[in-house]
Image 1: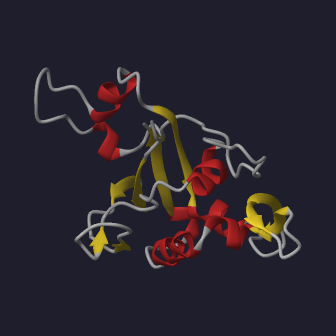
Image 2 (image 1 turned 120 degrees about the horizontal axis):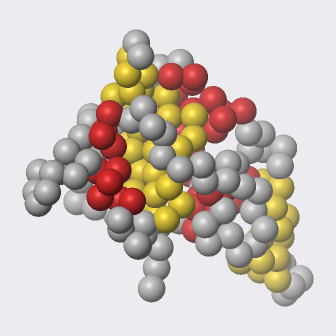
Amino acid sequence: MGTDIKCWAEVRKGDKWELVKDEIFPEYMSRKEYSSACFSLRNYSVFSFLAGVRNEYGCHVLVMPREFPQDSEFLHEKMPWGDKKTRQEELENDYDAFGKSYIMLKELLDFKYDDEYIYDPRYRRDDGGIGQKVSYRQWLGEMFFRHLEVLKTLGDPKDVRIVFYFQ
């Protein structure tokens, strides 16, 4: 069974964090060209980097999961069914949801993707051996950086964040 990420972007407007609802993130494997969800591909390299999830190769973890931010308006919205719990209450009781966290855009931008390396055993070398030292830019893949570029257009890096969990 695989692991998926549920990830969205929020922008601080004054003293409130607002959900980015626009479909601006390139979609990976959908009929739609764009989505409002960021980093939505099942990419274990990205999962290991963002939160240490599926970290089989010793990837540097940008931020260990820190739980959901308490000031997220999206998480405090009432669900449209049942006993009208908030999204956060619903997720707190979802035993399949784990790795709940958030990362500021500034934290994502401060990492030196071309200066840091990881040993990736998924590569075959020309000499027939297994494994190769690769940059985090290679490790994370092109789509990660396409989404990062979109996030940069949303505002000051201190006022943009991604919120996510895994299932």
